[in-house]
Length: 195
Image 1: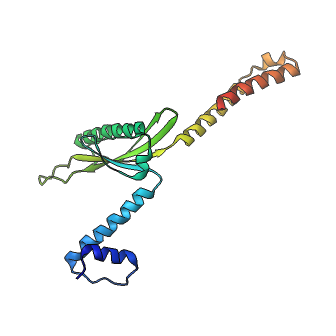
Image 2: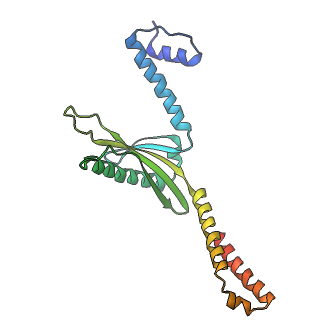
Image 3: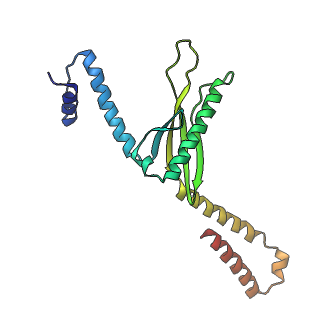
């Protein structure tokens, strides 16, 4: 009779139409295969994923999360600690529902990141009370390009408003070359803001 590891390797090697096993044997096999597939998924998605425990330590992180600079990783850990406190407070508030996810954003140097934190409860006590928030799972992504694009859009909008504010009386006293020069100066000034 093959071991559980041998069976898992055989199941991974090629497809099967059926598997015969005792009920007690199949559950660990299924869990091992699901766990292996989950690890592959979490390590290949484009976002950083980590689990931070109640003591603020990173219990697990995927490959993408480990590629971020140490300052980013540290900020994520801090935010997860704050999120855990927030989730715990919300959970203990009278009439409050189980806390859901919360979105956060932060910048470090010229990088901008967004993240979503979700609470992970410990096993519920037998008393029927709500379980404690034991960990926080965070999904983190680099939102720098989106933030830069938004800044450019805001600068274009501001320049449009400034050009629209040109006082018609002040402009009417200018000659056409002077008007063009005024417009040119304003456009150049706002173009520099975009760069």
